[in-house]
Image (cartoon, rainbow, N blue to C red; front, side):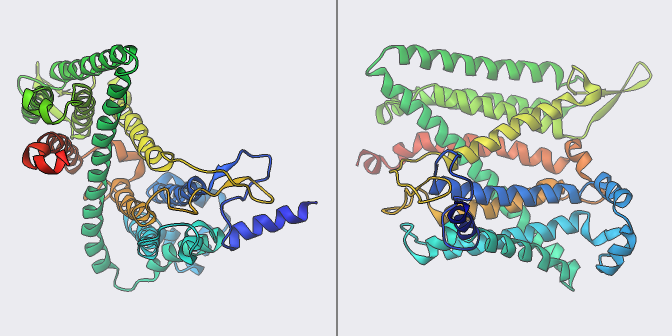
Length: 426
């Protein structure tokens, strides 16, 4: 009885079958969702390995628990204590392989319209073979001879791709704000309770934004230090006010009747989060007070455990998860079942639910972003994963620039109808 199921699992891993590698007691899954989930698991696996490569703690534990660790490293030609398999250069090589993997599939799936062709079959199946390909792509860079030039060039390519990935993240945030406002504004026409919900959420979001502004003004500024904090806190707060007033201005309302305060409220909260994240990522400032050196402009509660950096990390993780969910699960489908194994809904026979090529391109950029983030961008010398939250000036400026890009993108969605009124009327 188990023979058909075993054959199904083998076909899933080695053939063009859909991702149905689980038993039939598992809930049914859409082909498009299962495929994206598998690629996400590949991505997370490499990311976890990269984080481990930047941890001296992991290296020390391996040395303690693996017998003949040093001899094994020598036989593998990995240097003393496997020195070539750890550090920022190893992370660069791993992420180079993962980036090449996703870039290959990005090119392979250009202009794929449905799931019936051979390119779609490769995209949606052959998981064991693709895993072997990923392993090969990640291992190949470790055999490069001219390592120094490779690292110099790849470093700047990675930085460019990482910034572009952040740009796409900001685009998704602006789109989310507009979609949320449009959906709830449309509901007002059928039920007035939607108007109350819209007003309540908008008020809560603006309260959070203003509260965050006041909090940072109180605890992240100092009369004798933190000049950047004072300047950028004033600039970002003023810009949030400007876009909020612009969103409800008469000339914007004329071309965009559904433009309201919910979108700028979402944007303002996110900008305040980025500002707080930038302040937390900046190297600490010390001033002399009463004859002693005192660290200023830091989180006022439980500063010994660096709670501000933990808050930044947790919120950032939730935003990253939202982006994955935004890409994965926004879709419609028709039901169809496989003969054995987990039930699969083939929802792309007529047309694809998402753009295959763009999906892989985002993961390609995500690989570059992980490479730069794990190695602390350009401050990689002596860096380790345990110090990821310590921050640096490069991280500070990156996050501060993200504030302005986010505001600029939202501003462009407001004034675009004014610049091209005929196009938006059509």
